[in-house]
Length: 219
Image (cartoon, rainbow, N blue to C red; front, side):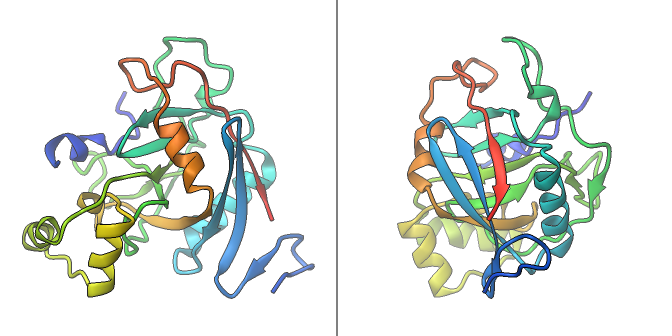
């Protein structure tokens, strides 16, 4: 079976509401991913309503609790959300699971460090670039020079503002994924935790040797 991966691209390219029980602000809805390495606070974008609604639904149902960050690549990203990963024994193939549906693409936001994005099947099997119903990744990435972004602009016809260039150069990210995957949120606290998880020793299949489990709750 084809995994919900986006790693092929990596290989080829270098105010609170009481009514709904959740807390939100003008800047978006907040959630926390709890891990043994610390907590990661994320903000979900209002600009990607389908992904936001789906993520909140899964979080409130407890879908993610006990799942693993099953694929971790230093300098790139950490991926999780496969339901098969819960209590998965060592060596089992992970990355194929999901809730049984996909989400229409809402591509737009860029892949700066801390970007929260949806994994998906590759273009050949998924020309509409629809997202996995549950699998997501958080970008660690690396600093990116202006020259590298110029190359991205030429090859992918994506415009980068001066602010984008400065952010990629200082914070870093993975711009080679821009325009191809839906970024539906960002890390607002806990980038150090992302770094810690991405530095974990991994097996050849990029699964951390010591399981990194998650629990997600809305704020």
